[in-house]
Length: 302
Ligand code: ADP
Ligand code: MG
Image (cartoon, rainbow, N blue to C red):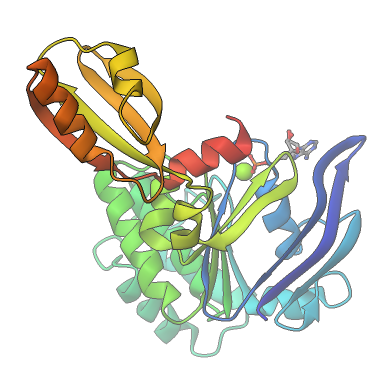
């Protein structure tokens, strides 16, 4: 197990930021740690990376306890904190050399060159960090987190504030890195988890509300097949409810409707039949996928 969290509670004064959190992350997994703002994501990550002590519970990273053996944990963990704090006055290469020195990396020069190459910073390495775009600063943040070749990578909202192109590049980089490492990344963007992660852990108000493979989560709780249909003219709600198998009806807008049906019942022939009887044309009809976003909203009530 790369990360094992058992019954962790964190109090800030009287406020409970984490409340009995437990989960495990196996070696090589890429985990999405999702939750709304204030859910406790950053707090959990700070505990795993030894930046904050938990109030209660136990956290073990690659066999090392975060409280008893924090030096060993710091050696095995790479951390990209939220808001990626960097020394803006330093040059990229100089900064990475400085971080390599802190970690007492052997052959620091070669390792910095390797990281520059890996994160695509060749053209930026001689620039001041302060002059870089947000996307390139995140690359520096990733290079910094990877420089001591840690087994585990903790990335706190690594793509927040990036434009769509930068986002795509950083996600690709994380996926590449994830081929060789255990990665835990936090986000409040569901598509990110769908795009990058194997498994998702959803946290809300300091408690884990779901922990499952992304594919399982998407199909979890689905006891409904959803069909979106557009007619060329008005149709009454009660007519649609009369179709065999239909259990819910919602007008999306104009003549577009969302029809819910019990799983395993194909209501499309019934919709066709009704349209025929009423002399109404069907402009489009399609099955809708339930997205992870829907699951997230249901679980976190947000
Ligand atoms: P997330 O990263 O999911 O947005 P955080 O872990 O940052 O959530 O915060 C969880 C809760 O703990 C929030 O209600 C936040 O206001 C509170 N909190 C975080 N850091 C501190 C702190 N240093 N002092 C007091 N409260 C804090
Ligand atoms: Mg946070």
